[in-house]
Length: 280
Ligand code: HEC
Ligand code: HEC
Ligand code: HEC
Ligand code: HEC
Ligand code: HEC
Ligand code: HEC
Ligand code: HEC
Ligand code: HEC
Ligand code: HEC
Image (tube, rainbow, N blue to C red; front, side, top):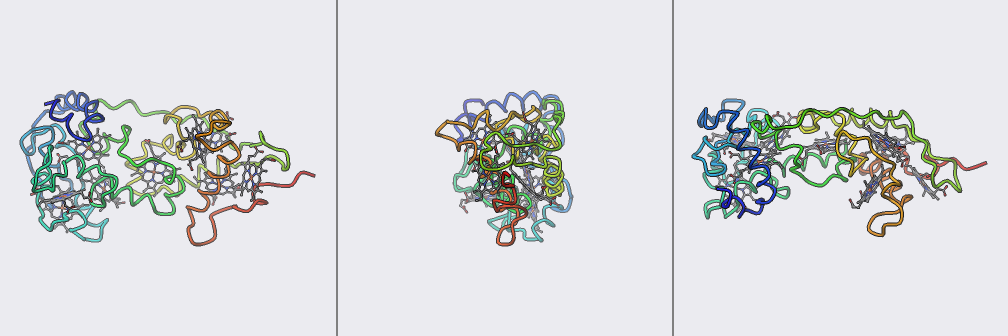
């Protein structure tokens, strides 16, 4: 079975999840339930033949999906997902291996493709292009991410790590390491965290941002969620493959201010004086 899965494009990433899923599937009562999928029932279990099980029996068939909520979210447009017009299980055409009926698109790609608007991950990604989300998300590689498998694959929960603590954060930060021409830029850290927390409202971020610690990574990238981040200058200096320190600040500050208010006035300072008071 492992050999079969490893052939898929997702093979490598899934292999590691496979062990996890097999363990948790055993814990969750492998195969219990069966295919109860009905458009009418709000919370349905995916009916897929995930990893070779018969429909409704596979370890990943416990990917929970709130059908009613999703119908509302797309304004009742059934074809947004049932893209062939057939309101049947996706796995009837998209098998694990891929079949001609499904245009040889494997089940995993049908669900996780970041570039297709009808896949779970692809449609969620389009949601993150909204201005209130884009400030951070312009910076975040498209998923799915290891930290989020269990949001959809509920039975992976048993093996999920304990929730992370939100590290302590300073209220204000004086960014002054480069100061020659200007006074240090005072950065209202607490106000930023609050404003971004307010921006990230709704069921989608609630489900996928494990907690506030996940939000820190919107700016402190390359720091694992839950760890205290280092200064930007730890990584941004002379490495030619990344922006230098001044550019790192400027790009991140300004791009977010712009992305959160496209076409209109930026959400906040993008003019020099907005962040830099001249030295007396
Ligand atoms: C947005 C929701 C979502 C996320 C996030 C997600 N998945 Fe899935 N995945 C699904 C759905 C839905 C299915 C289809 C389940 C079915 O039909 O039984 C699926 C199917 C699979 C399959 C089976 C594919 C096959 O060939 O049978 C594997 C393996 C898998 N996911 C692994 C992962 C891993 C690993 C992650 C995290 C990196 C992940 N998934 C994240 C929704 C998701
Ligand atoms: C956001 C995506 C989405 C939208 C919008 C959507 N569906 Fe679905 N629907 C699904 C998924 C995913 C399944 C589960 C398929 C599976 O088990 O592989 C499903 C299952 C179903 C099933 C049960 C199929 C079966 O045989 O297991 C029916 C019937 C259905 N949908 C009808 C509808 C109708 C009618 C609408 C519009 C009012 C609609 N759906 C809108 C994604 C969607
Ligand atoms: C009747 C067969 C059939 C059913 C049922 C079906 N698909 Fe497809 N799907 C196809 C075919 C054929 C293609 C390839 C041609 C195309 O893109 O339309 C495809 C392609 C896709 C792609 C890739 C599109 C791209 O642009 O790369 C995704 C994602 C996808 N399907 C998701 C789903 C989801 C989610 C469901 C269930 C809600 C579903 N499909 C149900 C036949 C089907
Ligand atoms: C066409 C767009 C679209 C597709 C396709 C889609 N989603 Fe969603 N999803 C949304 C939107 C929009 C929301 C936020 C709904 C709200 O705020 O009420 C959402 C919310 C969610 C949530 C959090 C709310 C909840 O239900 O607990 C989960 C989990 C989720 N989706 C899983 C899935 C899975 C699994 C699939 C694939 C089978 C999928 N989604 C496919 C648009 C989509
Ligand atoms: C403060 C920054 C920030 C804001 C604002 C924000 N996000 Fe996120 N979001 C993140 C980070 C960081 C992650 C990755 C978390 C992780 O690795 O666990 C993430 C992950 C996600 C994911 C899962 C992506 C995947 O590929 O698995 C979804 C869906 C999501 N966010 C939706 C939203 C939506 C919708 C909004 C706006 C309403 C929003 N986010 C606003 C920082 C943010
Ligand atoms: C959104 C806030 C923001 C805006 C707008 C901004 N900067 Fe900066 N800038 C910073 C931060 C933060 C630093 C790092 C501060 C430090 O280390 O002294 C910085 C550093 C600098 C430095 C190096 C420090 C020094 O004193 O020599 C120069 C020069 C600079 N900015 C010029 C500009 C100019 C010119 C503009 C307008 C085109 C501008 N900045 C707009 C935030 C901003
Ligand atoms: C809007 C972007 C943004 C968000 C969101 C954010 N930070 Fe920061 N944080 C910064 C910047 C910029 C600095 C200054 C870094 C420097 O001096 O190079 C900083 C500095 C810090 C420092 C001090 C580092 C040092 O050694 O001086 C800590 C600790 C910190 N942040 C923790 C957090 C935590 C925890 C969260 C989430 C609750 C968070 N931050 C969210 C942008 C952000
Ligand atoms: C642990 C190392 C590390 C730390 C700490 C770090 N970065 Fe980066 N950063 C990188 C790497 C690696 C890249 C190049 C790869 C890429 O583009 O993502 C990068 C790229 C960037 C880019 C260019 C890509 C883009 O988003 O436009 C910006 C801007 C940036 N960093 C800003 C910052 C800021 C601001 C901080 C502090 C809040 C910071 N970085 C902290 C490692 C780091
Ligand atoms: C991820 C998005 C994001 C990033 C990155 C970001 N900002 Fe902001 N910033 C905001 C938002 C949103 C507001 C509006 C806050 C409000 O309405 O309370 C804001 C407001 C401001 C303001 C005016 C109000 C205040 O809080 O002082 C200044 C000045 C500012 N930012 C400076 C910076 C500097 C300097 C940086 C880079 C070190 C930065 N910002 C990075 C989102 C961001």
